[in-house]
Length: 239
Image (cartoon, rainbow, N blue to C red):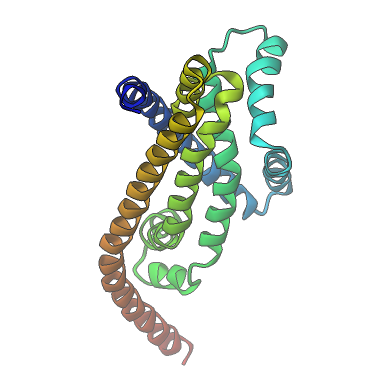
């Protein structure tokens, strides 16, 4: 066991760096894709809604392993380009997470109180200013728990990228186990690594939610006051 730890732990630490690299870059790009797609789902343009819906349907309807195989083997052949496995892994995580984030964004935007628009217009703001100051902040805060869960899911999903030989933690453990034949200790240590990593991410997610919750309450009170003033002003104009 001591020999296994001495050899395996450095390998897993190297794999951990690649796991986090693929997950962070992938989820970052996925957030951009999901945000645009989520906005498109709420758009009045039927073409935008149709394109977004087809993208979500394809991604949610196929396993991540199949997506990885397609991105790594099929797309480079179709486009006649070279694509290394790490880049392919990032693309897969980005496309996969983007489809799920789009539904999170759509739901969070739809859940914002319509009175925010009235409050912003009562202050003479443009639609862009209202969106930036009154719509996106509460929508982001309401979406944060789901976005955190999606990031954690994407970190765990990187283990499926072993199918295209991305050298993350699971791939490193598999390589070591195939050489040492010490499957019990190897995969036990791997499980402990994942458990520790995911536990830290869950803890960080909860702390971030707590930090954002207090400012959100204060801002919500201010927005309610503005909404009340807007309603009073509207009644005064109508009368």
